[in-house]
Image 1 (cartoon, protein in one colour):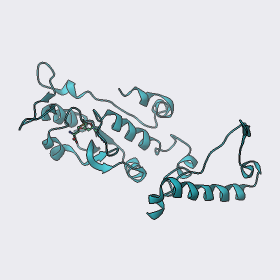
Image 2 (spheres, rainbow, N blue to C red):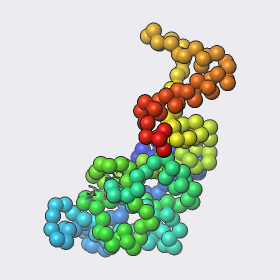
Image 3 (cartoon, rainbow, N blue to C red):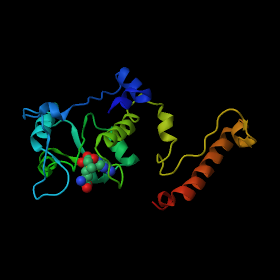
Image 4 (cartoon, rainbow, N blue to C red):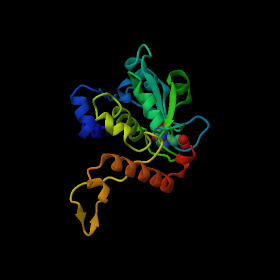
Length: 211
Ligand SMILES: C[S@@+](CC[C@H](N)C(=O)[O-])C[C@H]1O[C@@H](n2cnc3c(N)ncnc32)[C@H](O)[C@@H]1O
């Protein structure tokens, strides 16, 4: 499931030793002879709940001295956004726990988890995609993974959306690149980009302007 993290920019960052991403299979920590990790919810109801034992043992084996910041991917958690990304990127070590089925036995959250994070107000089948979303966004902020200029000149970096981007050819199906971008006048380009950034933020995300 985590194969995308071995591709493209994050894959290259791992190969270059800039970041290290380790995936652990909770099932391997189950003491049940069939490696069972889920059971019926107390009180009844649909679905299964992840049992505490395998999760507890996995976390304590992986992060024995609790040096990692431990996150549980959870729909009820704090909403993931660029400022959360920047905060997380300052941590040396993150442990991201992925829930499945109906979720996790609540005691594990109390005993082992530092923070619950949601990637939005919708429910997915498991925490794997949220964990990959978090890993990708945070790894971009690790030194040397991408050009630092890209991080300062992108959507949300200064509380606004990015300006429109264009590349060659200068004309495509009758549509021309704005003249200013090929003028060679850097001050004018900066001014145009700033204006477009404000315009697009007002159009698509007026809430950002308010904030
Ligand atoms: C089917 S969901 C469980 C939903 C849970 N019963 C509820 O109503 O909140 C299974 C797992 O997917 C992960 N998950 C689902 N939606 C998520 C979201 N929006 N953000 C982060 N994790 C999510 C969580 O780890 C969750 O335990």
